[in-house]
Length: 521
Image 1 (cartoon, rainbow, N blue to C red):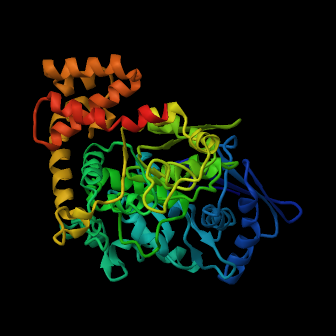
Image 2 (cartoon, one colour):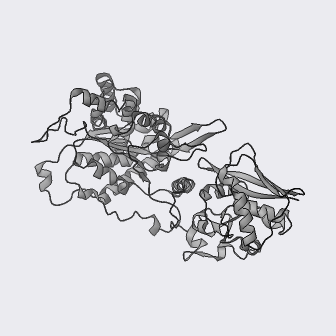
Image 3 (cartoon, rainbow, N blue to C red):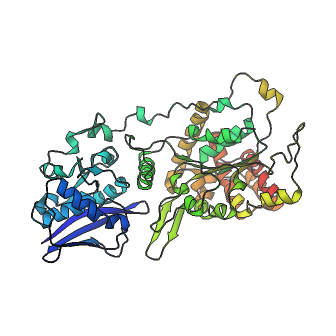
């Protein structure tokens, strides 16, 4: 007999519909799985056999063929276990196939028939909804995550024995509670959940560095890349680690994107009650590999850049990273997308990130910042080799580049904090609202996403500002890419100041944030 069960897999960060076809015919007892399965899928044979027997079902002693269609798409993971088990039960006549019509089945089976959670549930259910599938049968441990996809009926089970109860609609998630919350409560986004969290780390903790704090404000307001240079202990890392605290909360659409990525990567906390609303912050170590940064594998998985999508990617001590790794940033910073080509498929990962980086001016850290007994001991060749890790094209893609010197004695004597994360966040949100109101007709949200004709229209340069920018282009020898980034940056500075047009003073401030660019060249 033949049966057809609907299931799903993940390719990149998107879900793929998979048809699990099961045929049982007379012959020597054997089960074959075809359709480009990986080892984890092949091993499902033993899991399904033990789970069926330990759940009170009979495992057919016939020839069983399981086809995962489309057959030319490589399959991986354990999400097909439940669908394969249901296919065998319906093909062998132990259950009616009508019970699983218009139903997506996903879940991993344990040997005793229990259901374990799987990764990528959000992506799978989202594609099922787009295909018009009305019901989803999944492990109860994935219920809270799945509940954020509305317009589809969810059935949560913990054991294979509950298949018949679920088919009778007695285990609908609509009537269950997950960690004390109903489905309606899980799907409702309350105002209190949208409030930014109380940050334990505040910009008020940092002494002085008003210029750098101003740069952090501008970077957060327009989602611009930022690079800080300076001797050890001046607060570079402290400021960047406090950057997420001044960023606006993610919109519902952005939160769904980020949560889906973390679900696919298996990094979504099982205790999470709903979407991830805070912008992600990723800070990989400098021993990271190429694949760890951009993603990779036989079936590519998201890397650190994609995990930082809609948030901040922090690279501390930038020259300590291998140059081959740093050069991989060039295309994602420009296109906001990572494309990984394989023989059988081309995978696209989202990469709309804000790059924040820091580095010392030399390996010992004190070149150009000698003070007292702190003297630079690096030779010119060592410094040149150290800075050669930072290529011109990569630096060209960073909008704000500034030095962070030691705080002055006057700064250290100030007892009252002048700049707090709360104040900075308010300024960032006000600037973002101005950008959204102006740029929505161009289909972009923040100034860093402007390009081409839309950038010229949105900038609204005054004549004196245009002349200053043209002079800077000729005298400083900046590239056309840097020219456009100066325009975007000056537009953000004007938004922070509440100005509709870009004045010469905004251009001047944007230019002085490119001084490090000139030094490294």
